[in-house]
Picture (cartoon, rainbow, N blue to C red):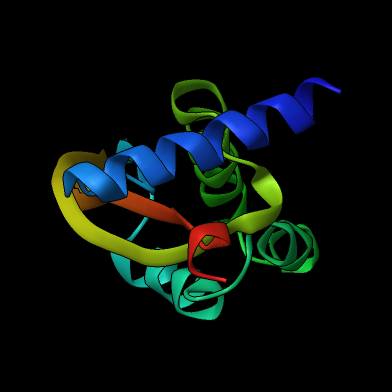
Length: 139
């Protein structure tokens, strides 16, 4: 019952904003910074899910065997929660329109080796941004 009222209020809000010429905001995003993994490895997963629906993406990420899937799964779940809580959007109509990964800082360490030597170790980090869009208004 409350879902019907929410949809009715949403339709009224859309009509009201269209009359006034105000653009309805239907995009929501989530950003995760300094994830301890290579941007190249995270990009491999993001290329598979870009342009897909929210439900389909969750299924794909659960079945993929890569380590990058878990932080991306959490981030998409967070973006959907933002859409539901902040804007009252329905999760069924959410689609990933933008998924980007950027390189973060590289943590440099020294690993002690034999005979007093040391080898440098680089721990790369990355920043991931997910943008979801509600497509129910365009259907």
